[in-house]
Length: 328
Image (cartoon, rainbow, N blue to C red; front, side):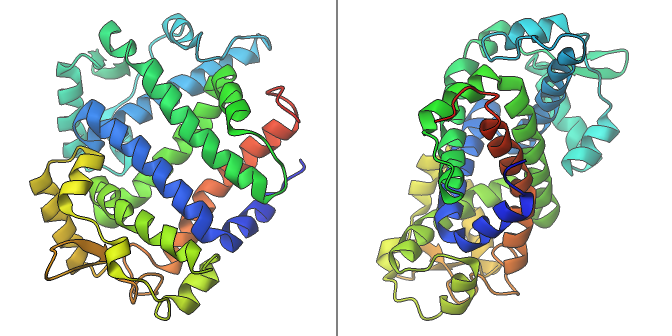
């Protein structure tokens, strides 16, 4: 393979601020869409778990037919052709990091919505037709966001690909890429579920750090080491990096009252500060990148790099091998 995982990890560390900003914007877009669809991210986490298993089963079709169509256009046909993939609550809870009782309660809500079905104490994913019809626009939007992120990382390793060409190929070999992305995303969500017991807390907090990273880039703060070394020396006007609870609510669709409650929790955790006059929130730079930070420590950054470097490694090498037919 042309690109090693270690090479990609090095690129992510050296270009942390630039890639982290794009990564955070992608995560905000994806998690917001999931929140809007399922009304909370715990139910969304469970649906992603089921969907990932389906994509893995679709990939297994190539064990007996190398020409099996694994594109998005053929996804629901593939889904229908597979035997129902059954899951047990205890395994879902273990793999998502959700408490067993929470997983059971959320699965019951998904059953009432006819998204998850139960057959002889086993569960499987089969969303109704009206919900399937809304997937294409969502899939196109999410695939575009992921393609933009991949294109940025590819550019950093001097492998130039247009995001539109990458997006086209993500759709063409949909189950290959979405299996790997969802598997990575589930690991990511489990990491934050275990750390803060609340994925929505991450979604709200990340919309504050997006603003900060845009300004860090302007101040020539690029790498993870720069963040650690310069965090208390960077001259940033808090007016440029603060955000209101109302704005976060509008971005994420999370009710404003919930946003306020979770923003105050982030203040108590020292990730954010609150301007006493404007009542707006901004990242606590003195804690950002410090070893004591619960959400923004160097170890958190390294953990995120380890989780996603493997995904970038698989994708970039697949593109380089010409699987997608988009080599330039």
